[in-house]
Length: 510
Image 1 (cartoon, rainbow, N blue to C red):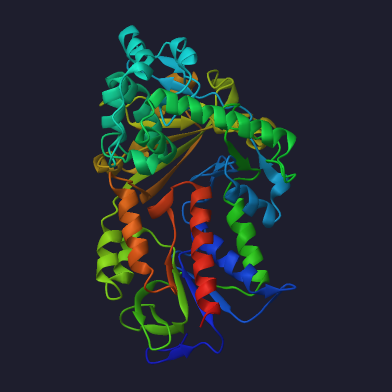
Image 2: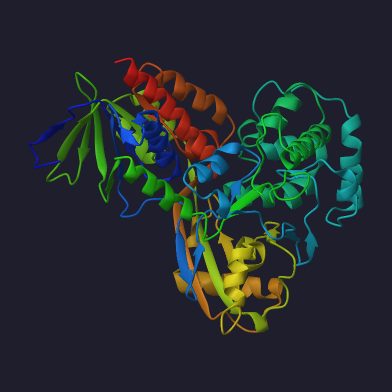
């Protein structure tokens, strides 16, 4: 890059990946691998651009009482391959670790804590026997759930909110006590606004074919058990899941990384650097426009812009900056992307003296049934959930317990308008009875994630299809990230890989 009138023209085909979160990094690595021969980049120059001074997006660690801990996402799906395979590809396979405990609790109205019933699919019951003994629903609600399989089913002809459909089939309590806490933890959203098709696509496909909800959930659990057995004994092609991971039917479907999930970012970045990918951190891409032969990035301040010409672009930024970059390129796509809304959340991490806490036990944390007087929507008992973290806490001169609380849902901005001190104080006051804390924390860290979780509203799948259809006219431009096909790490990696495959084909065909 150079001054305001300098234009950098690539001497070889070049790709710019805008966005240094896990989706962008996965896209950059897949592209780099595609064009690397015997460890040497061949034919294509790849660059990553991000306005932040550090890579990783929502994957980041912070220090609490001198211990590094994830303050964003802290686990990855093990029941789909993308995250696990990427970790292995960059040398972290031996550091993957299943949760030491995977039995979350459920905080009911009034502060009563029960074990979360087994066999839930985003709160939809698939194990009716387990639900009946969980003591989280009233007798009339249990009767309604048990009778649902015999109710006539009108096949779903179009998308519908999760809350509306589940309430019609299973009643109000299932939505309020099971669906809402799980949706709050995953999407920071509300059941009556989130799409059944986008958030639970396997269930949507089953009910669209006329299957009852509880039957669809039970069949999904059966398939998960079969997949778990295949993983345990090896699949037909000889592959296995990471040691200790299980499917949703047998235990945890998730896996962490010793040292924190954010370790994955550093490992991918190191691999990219070794393969000649250039990182531009703290570099905001403010504009995107077409040229006769590709695309021009406008980088830097408005007063002193710099320009870089490339042949192809991956936009792995959240919906709002993506929409802004596309405004002059394709206003229709920009409008569709810009209409995807986001929730803001905060993670508050606490360190307690181990001798002051007695209630974390063998639980991985709790989900909280939404109540007007409750701030915390979920809590993770981090030092119990992750063995590597528990070992660090236990070997301190003063053994510690680390607990993190999640705060904030879509449309509840006022909750997050408190300053860090007030937010942490209120969250701790709610947590202490849940973890049996006899004294206050000795350290705390508030991490705010503004506009971090996209809301998959009713019609989201159709919206994404329209976006991709419109973008098909420009194969050298691709989008990736949580805004489209899934908010989890594995889904974001998959979107990065899909974008990379599209761009690789476009570059080869030039």
